[in-house]
Length: 510
Ligand code: ADP
Image (tube, rainbow, N blue to C red; front, side):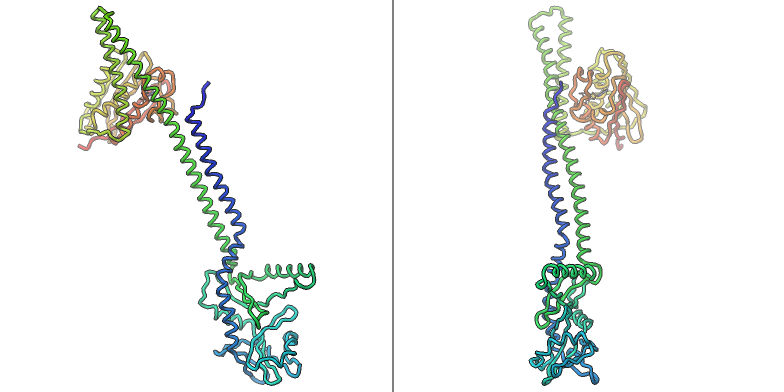
């Protein structure tokens, strides 16, 4: 029974922890964002109101001051006009009134009703023009009046003219949203009178008014004697609260989307790196046990041979020679393996220096073939070498590239089964490259392994590989060497049908 490797287990645990640490806070963050969006309209309203509060305070001081500087003038016989020092008229042409002997005289019946409250106090009104507000039955008017002896004369101020005055005063106080300032009556508070039903009714009426008219963005009730009016800020175009909150939502949505996108990318990337590291560390462990095993086997044989010789068991000089040959072979294997590990260490740490020189391709091929022939001396195989005529020079480190080629030849030999081995080495030109290819009729390589065999420590998991000595470093080293020369290493292979590895070396700049 096979147990999952502990490294992979710890990878899963680390990954689960990562997900937990990332997903929980981000879910919390998103939830918080949603709550913020729900409450956002109120927040925007508050912010806008705060932005206009200062302007409202200034205007509510300036307007009464401006009104205080006005004068009443007779126009024609009956009509009165309320004029500011710059002759701007604020009065309503039909709003002239007189209060004499306890009687109100005006053309406007509603004004007459409102003025009824003024009659008892007529005698105490100041003799200079004064502006004040009056309210009856939920309606409010603003009037300018003055006393002349026992008579009070005055005029109702026009809403339109007052709005004009306000917009003059508000000019220069630019706000980012398109708004206008206006005066509206203070809604009559009926809540204190008449119990729950009345209160409900008035609230419903207020809600309907809000729904119908433009929403009031900010307001401020004027102080006495204009206390029946409030200064309000109304949007002129679309509701700035709605547009600001739509904008905020869009920005939040985009940010949230980006956040999750980067989060997904980050988690995916980290998982990949973690997984690779876990796999690498497992391969390293395999490598250490493999190398130790590979070192032990030749050492054991060497010890046995030496003991045999030392005990003088072999009298026949021919037998002695054979043992000595075997000893040489085993020590060669040992030093080969150690050399490969050291080579890898040099390449990995960046200490490997390549001595490049411009050489004929045959130099590289001959060096590799000579070494291969020495190693495989006497082994039954069909080995052919074909070098195209007139190949250009290549600019390479001869020892390193010949080593890479030798490794391909050794692999072709190792992974070709015991009988009928056919290995062909070809050197030919291919555009700007010289291709050195090694073809065998061996076990071949499955598609899923083809990419990975160039990874360090990777060995295909099959019976032949398990029986064959190796470190999983050969192809990785070959690839690094060829890469360093600006070349490529490729493989074509099908399981059971042999493999063809090709080293592509760029043609040297002569
Ligand atoms: P090793 O020391 O195991 O030979 P390599 O890096 O040279 O290491 O090769 C990696 C793996 O690729 C080998 O273990 C083997 O399974 C596979 N391989 C390499 N060359 C061949 C080939 N010519 N035919 C089949 N399999 C091969």
